[in-house]
Image 1 (cartoon, rainbow, N blue to C red):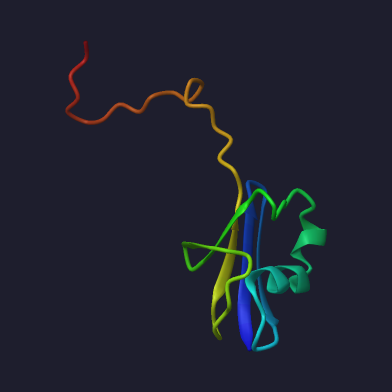
Image 2 (cartoon, rainbow, N blue to C red):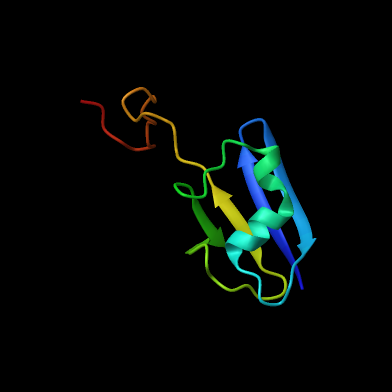
Length: 92
């Protein structure tokens, strides 16, 4: 069956379409895709993965056409990010 594997970093995004066996899991598909070699920072033990935007376990079964997404940790520190001013908000 054909599925997709997607990963994004600030400077580069990658979406692969690959053929996997009908009994493939999220983890086997990620490993088979070769994306772990292209992005060595991916750590499946700690990074969250999902299928079409919904969190999934590495041992989850796949269906034809599924898109596996590998999510990076958010690295912005709220203390250092400027606060957005919302229209209509009163200044104190």
